Image (cartoon, rainbow, N blue to C red; front, side):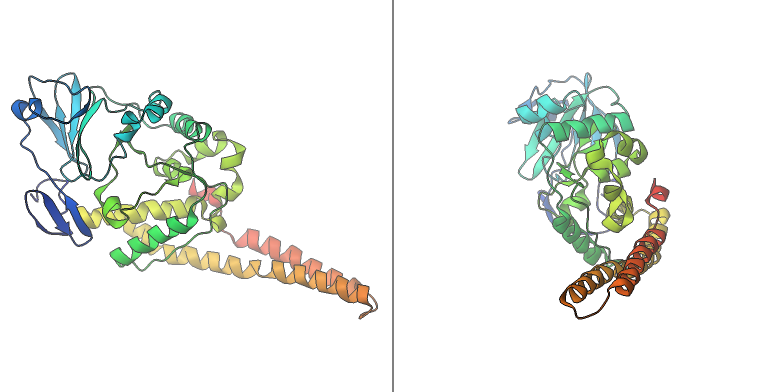
Length: 345
């Protein structure tokens, strides 16, 4: 098994014909001998399951095995991770809303735990671009598929991953209210594919992640922020003090580190990024210290007004000037110390 890229060599503890046990949990498993006879004898399929005359293995990756079956290509997922890809084609509303943006599967086969086979048109999907991703995300928003900010669960998910990986990093972020979520749509080109096995093992519950995260993952953040609309691409969504681009990069790199540990490959650039997180957080800590002057100055201004109004002090002029200066300096110092989110583009 070790030679297959979809086999979690780094975390596997045991397996039989129907399941695999890892240090992060147990999952259903089925490794078929894919040939014409096996394919044409499948039952309980969905969609327009094609009858085939030939089958040829194209490649294997961490999602599974890709086969050329004539007019279509098939992805066989030995260890299912959910139905995130197939539901886009099987739910009539989802299919109607997203078929113009995505190369959806036209048929498939399930196991209890999710998609086992997905059948796609035998043509290369479009590349992920800023324009295509913005169009997809606008449909998510306009058709009512977006979800509110879920920073509580986003941060809880990261804590679970950090604990499992035993990293030296710990980063929680208060995301802006306009940082909204969307259903999990993992893309290979503009073709939806199953979520990674590591994601499924580390956080098995259904969780919508931020639109911004997908833009960051595919390297189209600059185009995305300029075109998604002011309501969702403004500075408070992007800036580091409210999570923003920097925290999304942390999330993406942390999950890639999980994949590297599970599947036994090196990611030196991810290790370098994670090693630099402490320095980045130290800068944020100094910035938050500067921010403490803002409520202090506001309280001071209020107390000065109350004291002057009650006759406790003759004149509040000195207090007003002092606390106003503290307020101005605190705002300026905070902006100066906050890591520039533009550098994350």
